[in-house]
Each structure stands twice: as C-alpha cells, then as structure tokens.
Length: 247
Image 1 (cartoon, rainbow, N blue to C red):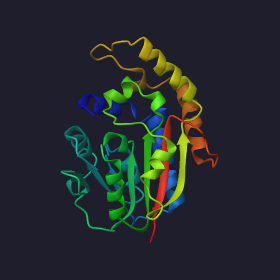
Image 2: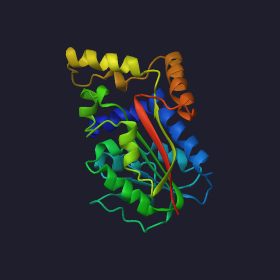
Image 3: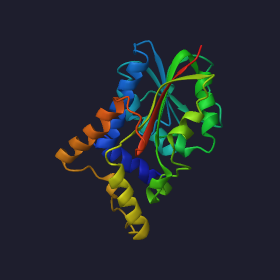
Image 4: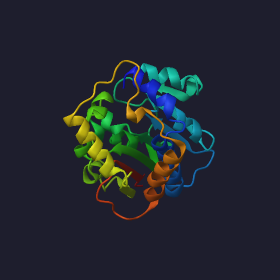
C-alpha cells in the first residue's frame, strides 16, 4: 500500500466496524484454537499500523513484521525496536519452530507467492502452533478498491484452503465472513465499474469513512457474530482460515 492508504487506515481503524470487527474475530479465534498465555509468542505479519498487534501484546509476547517504510514508521510509535522486524527478502529472520501463533490479517492478497508465505508460517510455528489469516473473498467483487490496495487476487474458499496442505496443517476453521453485506457490496462495486467516479485529492472514499454510530454497531455485529457459526457459507466479502501445525 502507498503512504496515503496507511494514513487512511490509521484514521478509521479504531472504530470502523470492519477493522474493529476483524480484530475481535481474530483474537477470539486464536483463543478458541489454542488458549493464549503471557509466555506465548506471536508474530503479526504485515502488521501495518500495528493496532491489532498492540491489542494482542496485552495477552502474549508479540513481534511485528512488515516491509513497507510507512508501516515501519507507524510500528515504531507502538513497539520497541527489538519487537520490530523489517522484512528484507523472502526469509523471516527467526529460528524454526519458535512461535505459538502467526497472524496475517489481509496480507496474503498482497504477495505474488502466497503458498510460499504459508510455507514460511509452517517453518516458524512449533507443533500445535496456530496460523490465522484473513483475506478478501470473491473475484466477483474485484474493483478499484483492490487496485488501490495493490491486491493480486481475491480468494475463493477452496483456493485459500489449498495453500494449507492437509499433511502439514489441521484446519480448525475456514469460512466466508461478512456475509450479510455481500449483495450490497456487489451492487455498489458493479455500479462503480459501470459509472466510475474520480476521487479528488484529499477526498475520502466510502471505504475510508466511519458510518453513523448505530449503523457502525449494526454492521459490526453482522460481521462478528456469524464469524463463529459452523454453517458453511457459500459466499462472503472476506474469508478467515485458522489452522494448527501438525506435529
């Protein structure tokens, strides 16, 4: 992402229903998959502004990783230098099998070799360690939003599961999320593709705005609550995968 996108994210992510809901979902699923203790080590990959990692730091031993200078600048405002890893190249400079958790919230869509990144997660985790990823779903929703965020893809459920091979991973949970708003998002993005509107300098896109408080609460609830249901949803705006490394 470019510097403007990080600024947009930092401005809205504290209260915006999507970002706040995503952090809540991730934290609760980590706890379900493997109860968290203060001694557990978590690496947050593509940590961005560091808000999720900072929230998790109250519960376990957190290290953050990113390769964008703007993200690293923001991370330095929240974490000590020894807690920050600047990724250079493809190999994370940590020893094998040392982590209990690896998280990547809306990260895999930004990298060409997503399977290679997941292989790196497997190397870093100890047996029984948990990887949690979220990604945008459905190429039917591809839009200028994805282009501005430098996405390579949006995922189908099977496509995401395929990069976590069964011989290496036990899938704890894999499902679409953000299901109720899918029809509205599809309509809005189709409309914008047919009738594009140029955004002037300094103007906020709809995705960068926090809705009125009651709508924000309603949207967050519609996002968070179904994210713990065991129903196999056929579609959604996003996907979550929680996997345990096999011993």
